[in-house]
Length: 460
Image 1 (tube, rainbow, N blue to C red):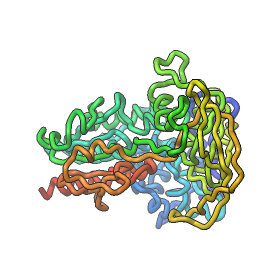
Image 2 (image 1 turned 90 degrees about the vertical axis):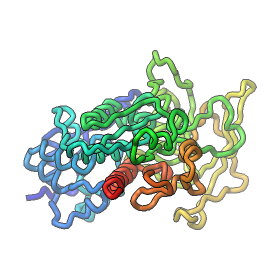
Image 3 (image 1 turned 30 degrees about the horizontal axis):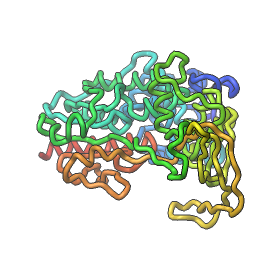
Image 4 (image 1 turned 90 degrees about the horizontal axis):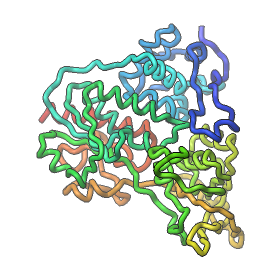
């Protein structure tokens, strides 16, 4: 008999006034008892709409059914058949807009906490050294994967299971891509990323670090080395700026730089060899998940933090959970505001920011109401640091060094639905082809491309 409680089983968390001073994970995770309680809210629908909402088609009722029986190993095996990075997805996926958004329990209450259960099962497997290393025999074919972010890791894992010899080329000194440099420790502990990457190594995936494709090697050279197909999953790490006066002042960061210093270089530690700028009052420009991550990091570094966003709260693109956590942690939201100038002192450091108030007009091409400046509403905000988090685009290095590789006007590699590009044998997916999006969508693209590469090489 299903538990018909209308509310999700509460996730234990650090208290806001404690967690906003440390980088430990905010959510503590379910205990086995809490997990089974939440699993019992699942109705086990015969036509599970939740699976339709999952970009990697996780068999959700099946893995939850195993939890209901107390069979955690069975739950993990069902989960990991479809998802190469379940411990990651359970933490950072926007489930409310995907699997949980389709859950029938959400019609008259809260949906089943699918993401929380996914995290629980994945963490249980990591703690108990349970791995799903079932793979087909080596087929002798070699595939190169560029980038070790969610798209690249997923593509590599899927191909390794099919018996391919896969080499991942990563530009940074650690694997994980945006999982390592972009998402803060308090949302996604790096030990989790390392363990998930380790599982792929156990499948036979070779990961080569400090390999900037387009500089160290070109895609043409990869083919000359004997790779029969190439997947580009290099992400979208090129930051965008507002193009307003003052963005070259000391104290202005792209969110990418700020988060990379914090997450990858551990700049929040007192003995860090690459310390971050010590701020007293920070303005974060933007309203997406990256803006929330940067703001919450700055708060933990001791600053008074304001998120400045040109639309209203209803239009914030960030996950509702991230906005909720940011507010709990004492971050201010200056909504319907847009910066027009950053002003500096005599030493060239940020001193203040001129902001204009906005109102919402008719919807624009994105479907959101267009922000319109209110004449004469300018005011000055005293800040010493500005973090720009308004989006990113793919780095042009790979496409500029690969003849015949088509891209659109935003610099994203053009692909078909199967991940194929204009170059034979070259496939792409994730942020490199869509622009900045979610981890799970990148994983879905990596999974699709792996299937296409398998078909391409078998037909070839």
